[in-house]
Image 1 (tube, rainbow over the protein chains, first blue to last red):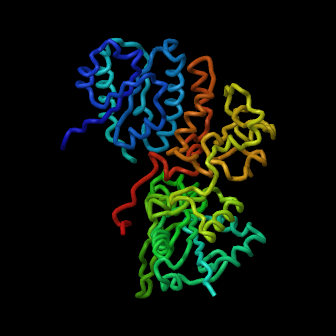
Image 2: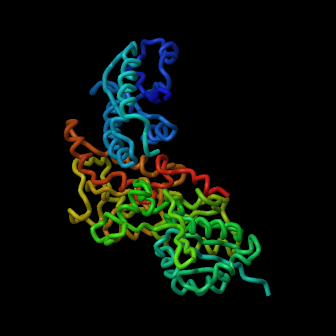
Image 3: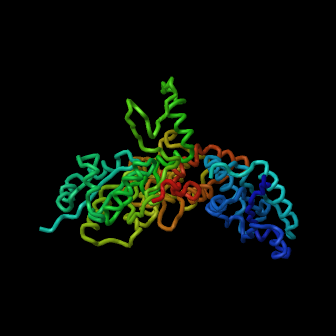
Length: 131
Length: 327
């Protein structure tokens, strides 16, 4: 049987994550990585479209609490994520498949690691059953 | 004498509320009958399907179809009326977006059958009988339509010319739609025959909306005595007005009930559910993470609430018809 490799989409805030990194070099190491101007810019429909398009999980990396360049974009997205997780569950998508993490990593070194950690969890969950 | 334009009115997976709304045209329905020749309307008049089958393709000027497509009978009639009609109007929330019946898509066909024919406390079915599409009795074959594993919107099955949402659509918009067809003064194909604004734009309660809204506690409509003039959201009561098209006549709002979203999203919005979710969470105000979680946890059945009328047309809920359903 072919080994299951989950598809993960990672959105990250450009202010907190990887702004000192060589973005193209980092992007070449991770697939489906989408740096955005602020995690608050991520719309719920972006997340849903990722799942619709075949993502097995979505990881959002925002700035630490109190450090959002646009005041509280990270907190606004966290609230969306918490409620969206409940909605996803009704659609048959486990809440663990959508994760938000607040921190700062200027060089973005931890991004591949965080993706890898979440991918391991997605392997355990297996493919989404209902979509 | 010039023949009057022929109109067919048909229900698919519907409750007849949409038909009732046509009856609610009251005296105006006499003018409609004067202007058009109704050739099919199962809820009100006795016509045979064979009568429609014997018609020329495109002979019917307008088919007004309410209801979602849930079984093979719905599909067959939708396809037949599409073939015989110049114009098809998706009539009501179910035909346009799937409607409340579309919430069944949160369950599988198996879940639904098990509950309805076996597990519900009121069911007595000792022989464990489930509906079959074919049954042999005394050498005869009895057939039933096939129950699909998904609720579809009308435009997922057939080409639709116009949309008139609502649960049910209000009589003034019905009269406008019929007049537009009779007079030939029609908007571009694919248009929704309703205003383009969001409900909040026309809501009378908007005047009393505070400039800055903050929700610190979610309240359910039956738990409080809502002020009949205040914005529901400002009181912490979930109201889908911000993500819903106006035109309904605000029947719910006027009877002190928040909007449930039966008019679907305003133009340009794919999926009222996620848009509303974003709008609602942006209003939630709390000092700590725990408080945020507490408020969010107090929202009962968010998927059922935000997708009440639109699950089958939503980003995650929509599904392509199965291969057996393709022409």
